[in-house]
Amino acid sequence: MSVSSDMRNKMIKYNYLEDLPNEILRETFSYLHALDLFYALNNLNQRISSILKEIRLHVLIERNTSRCQIGFLCEKLYDHCDQVISMDISNESFDRTNLIEYFFEEYFFVNLVWYRFSSFASNSNFEYVLRKLKKQNQVVYLNIDDMESAETDNAIRDRAHLFSKEILLDPPSKLRHLIFRIPYNYPGLIDCPIGNSNLTSIELNFYGKHDNKSIYVLIYVFRLHRSLRRIRAVFENYIKPGCVYVG
Image 1 (tube, rainbow, N blue to C red):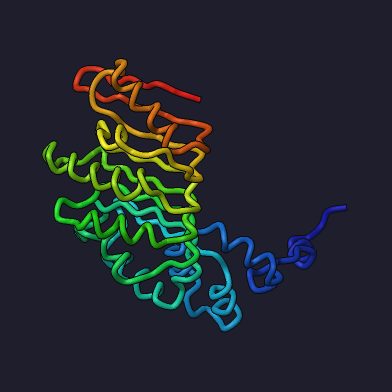
Image 2 (image 1 turned 60 degrees about the vertical axis):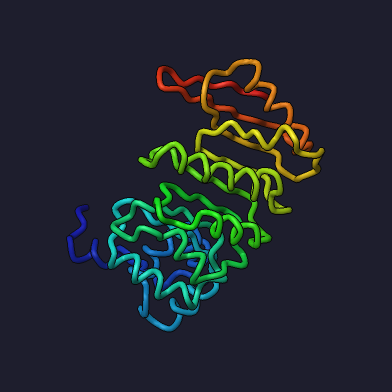
C-alpha cells in the first residue's frame, strides 16, 4: 500500500528552535562563539534574549573578522562581558592595530579563564596588557603567540623580557597552563628565587641550539614552578628548529 505525498507530509513532525526547552538551548548556545550567537539571535524574541544573558560566552576574533563584525561584537559585550569565559584574538584582524589592548581598556572580564592572543601590533602597550592580565584572578590558561611578528629583534626581545618579568616570574595565582611563543633566552631565570606557583604546564621558545646552557635554564624553570608536570621547550634558529620535551 503506497502512501500519498499529502499523507506523508501530515505524518512528518517538524521541530522548531522555539520548541526546545531552555536547558537544551543554554547548553547548545554555550558551545557557539559570541559573534555568531549575537548575529543570528540578537533581538529574535524575549525568551531567546533572556537565555543569551545567562550563558557562558566565547569570544573569537580571527584574521578575516571584519571591522563591522568587530564593532557589532564590541557593542554587545558592554552588556555581556561578565559572561565571557574565553577569548581568542588575532591582532591581525582587519586594520584595528591595537585590538588586544583595546579590549583590556574597554572591558573587565571577571569570569574569564582562557586567553589566547596572537600577533601584537608594533605600537601596542604590551606591558599594559600583561599587567591587566595579572588582575584577571580566574585565568587558568594563557597562550601568547607572536611568532609571525615582522618586528626587529630588539622589539621582540623587549616584549619577551616584559613577559618574563610580569608573568613567568610572578604568574597569576590560578594560572595552570602557560604558552609563550616568542623566542627568548630568559636570563632573569638564573637569579630568581625558589617559587611555589600553581603552574603545571609550560611551553617556551628559545633562540639558538638546545645546548647545555639552554637546558640549564630549564632547571631554573622547575625551581621557580615546583608544581610543574610538563615543559615543552622549542629552540629556534635560522637553519633548523628543534624541540625538546621534558616531563
